[in-house]
Image (cartoon, rainbow, N blue to C red):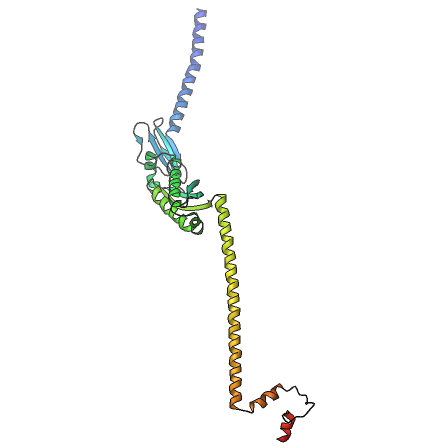
Length: 274
């Protein structure tokens, strides 16, 4: 009888830990269910839910705490604030010069089309949409211009790339805010050719300016010569009009000294006669 009672006590002692283990397991499951039933959308983001059985929900979720079915639904979060995407593109110009372009893209997702973007494209839209779009547009626009135009008309080329990319990305629910071309890089041979051309143009401009100075100086001399000829003409006309004009000129040029010899045509003899 004693052995039977001892065995019963041991059975009760072994049943107690099993009960606690069950409670702990149930508690853990409850916590998992509770935590798995909610998800948080951070500021500047939109939430999308993918259901294992029905696919992507048509509804999008704003920032905050939201409910979902545990195990069967998985949330995805998309940033709808302006993002920056940098990419390098290599292309050939119209005159077959290799051009390396560095593009900086500012964009944001259409917040009302986040679920459509996720359904049709997925979360890796930068790799699947933005990157190939930049590559194709840059190649298409670069091929329309010769290399020198990409330097002298850089803003025009940038605007063409921007407008073409804006139209292309809008079809995938991506809105282009701004675009910057941080670099147009050419081959070393082309860079040397451009430098030589610029130097030649600067030298030609310098020679042209020098020629203009020489022409101006020559014109000044012509004007001066014409002025002197006109002055001589006026003097001759005055001499013809008044014989006494020579006396006036003689007085104007007299240095104040008396002549050493008196002649019949000297100034003193003339004065004495008068």
